[in-house]
Image 1 (cartoon, helix red, strand yellow):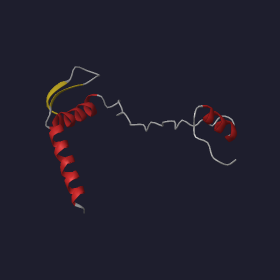
Image 2 (cartoon, helix red, strand yellow):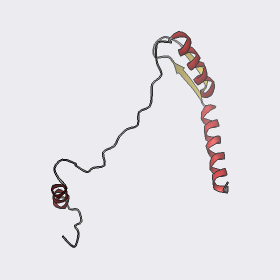
Image 3 (cartoon, one colour):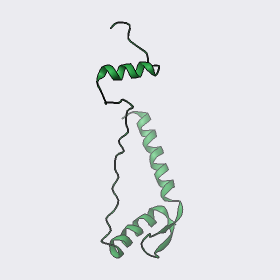
Image 4 (cartoon, one colour):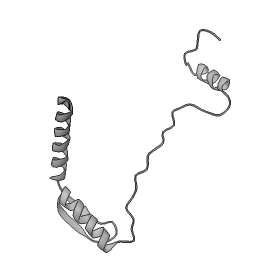
Length: 95
């Protein structure tokens, strides 16, 4: 293991520990449940609350955002190249 990786892992762990020690107020969006305390403990308490009080609610899933790469696939390749050149794109020396 390289020295840089050890330093990065130690920094990441220190960052996570500091974040979990932050005092926050956690509230339930579905009822009047509220808890003030450290983020790490509040997160666990909220998960327990949600499982006990709201078992019908499923946790949100993260979706990967698909970003378009800016290339239009409408038409054919020659039309796309012509449009790109019209917008100022560099051209090839030989055709």
